[in-house]
Structures are given as structure tokens and as C-alpha cells.
Length: 138
Length: 185
Length: 119
Image (cartoon, rainbow over all chains, first blue to last red; front, top):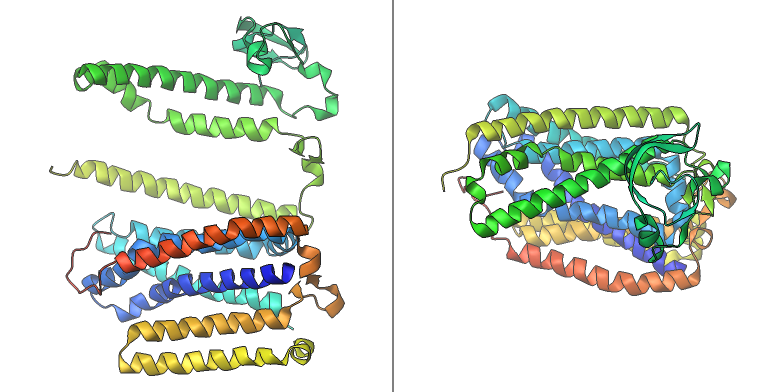
């Protein structure tokens, strides 16, 4: 049974990576791929409606780990306290970037949040890589 | 939380009062007799245990703060019930949009839900002390040993900074939206 | 990792799948079918994670010495809890996957520049 749950948790983690991965990619690339404001809007619209749901896979992973492998949750999250908090802040920034962008019709505002979104996505992607790499380095 | 220091039967529900931790009593208390017993046990006369009946090391560490936050929450809740009841009545009569006084009250009551919410959470978390899991697990035993206090300070200040930033942004964006005015219907 | 490979040599298949995923993604992307390219990159990600998970198993959290790692058996809750969680997980996962499929189906096709679609 714990083997089964190991596989299921790995599958949930991989599903989170798939769903949030394309969102990271959009974030990192949209500064380069989209030149004009309309193109940026298009890029953001491509992820717009679904990104909330994609984040939930991470929450689901944490919740399932609490039910199934609580010692893993305790050890990993306590040991990785600071890095995970920084990941949390980057997630907040990413969400801010995409949601606040079109609230104020100002050039500087939009550019700031675009860059914040891109920087947060890039740092998040590299942070997750660092986490899993540190955990599973031989 | 209720300011109920000594066990009594027919325990009353305290509406207002100031808890005194030195004398373990409630100053200037206004209470409705019997209601606390009824709420706790379903009977008007049953005894409700007071705080002094529990061992001293099982008391929450800050009883006055707990008391005040609970009463703020409950008081605001009652206020909301009254306000909304009145507003519903006016709406059914079709007079809500003309009753300027009530509309002003409704608008000015904007910060109260946030305050009540925060006070409620404070009640929960202060009242649970010193237990993390009641009767089984104390907060002092339940902390992660890997996480040093300096880590926690860093993240606490970090979160405070993030939330300060968020509240400034919220304020800014909301005033922008308000300044734009409602959309054309 | 090497011990895991010795015990379960079939896990090399995951690496092959992952490499195949990258190659297929590139092929499909160049030929223009973006949907298939996405699926191929998903395959790559799943195979990569599966290979890592299979090499780490039975540790969930490896330590510097192989005996110091946290194994799945130690980290898990009681057997009954695992079974009950499974009973809740399966319907929940069906709901989540069904919702995801519905949402991605319900969205219109590609956005064009100049569409004032509401966000």
C-alpha cells in the first residue's frame, strides 16, 4: 500500500510540474516572445483562465502528503523551511504580476508587473529545480 | 474567553466587563443569568466549570486578550445581525435605497468584518494554548526542531513586508477603480 | 541510484521514454502540431519524474548515507489510513481530472492578436 501511494504521489507531483510548467514557461518567455502590448495580452490570455486550478495541484500534493506520508511532510518542509518560504513569496509575486497588470492603465505599471511576473517565474523554476536536486542528489 | 473564573451553576453570559487576572474576577460585569449554562449543557441550572478549576499550567497565557478578542468578535457579529436584519426589512419594504442613514451605516461598517474575522482567529489560537491538540500535545512540544528562531523571524518579517506591500497595492488599485467610477450599465 | 538500477533494471525504460519525449516534442513542434508537441513534452516530464522516483524508492527522502534515508514504510501512516485515503482520493482525483478536461475543452481555440477577450 505504501508503494502504491509512493507512485500516486510521484504522479501528482509530475502532474503539478506539467500544469504549472507551461505557466512558468509563459512567464519566462513572454518578455522575449511578445513584443507589443497586444501580443503580451495574448500571451497572458493563453494562460489566464486556468492558472488558478493549476496551482491547486501543489496544494493537493501537500494535503495528500499530510494524510499519507506525514513524516515526509514534516521532515521535508521543516528542513526546507527557508527555501519553501521563498518559493511561497515568489508564487505570490507571480500571481500579483498576472492579476494586477491590467488594473491601472499606465505604461510603467504594466511593464513593472510584466518584469515581476517573468522574474518570479524564472526564479521559481530554478528554485524548484534546486529543491528537488538538493533532495535527491546522490 | 467568557470571563468565567469560578464554577457556578446558572452561569451567566457576560455581555461586557473587564477581566482582572490578579483577583480572578470580572469588574463591572453585565451578564444575562443562566444563559451560559444553557448554551454549554442545554440546561439552565447545570454547573459550568470556571477557569480556576483547571490547573494553572493549563491556562492560556493571555486571558484578557483572549477575552477581549472574543467579545469583539461576538459583539460585531451581533451588530452585523442587527444591521443586516434591518437592511433586509427595508429591502423587502422597497425602501432600502432611500434610507440614507442605513446606507451610511452599511458603508461605514466596511472594516468591521475584517476586524471580526481577525478577532475570531485570535480567539481560536489564543484559546487553544497551551495545547496544540487538546489534552494530548502541547505547543511547547510541537515545534519543529530543524527550524531555528532566526529562520522564523526572517519569514515572519518577510511575510509582514509582503502583506504591507499587498495592502498598499490594494489601496492604490482600489482607489483607482473607485476614481474611475461605476461602469455604464 | 546504482543499487536501484541493479534491483530494478527496467527503470532504464523511463529514461528512454523521456528521451523519446524530447525528440517527439521537437519533431511535432517543427511540423506544426502544437497539441502533440505538448503531449510529448508531458511524456518527457512524466518519464523523467518517474525515473527519479523509481531510483529513489524505497527512500522518499534520501540521506547522505543510504541507511540514513527516510523510507516510505517509516514515513507512512497506518495501513487502514492509507486504504481510507485511497477511497477518498480516487473520487477526488476523478473530479479534478474531469474538471480539468472540461475546462480545457470549454475554452475557445487560439487567441488572435486584437481579440478583446475578457480575463
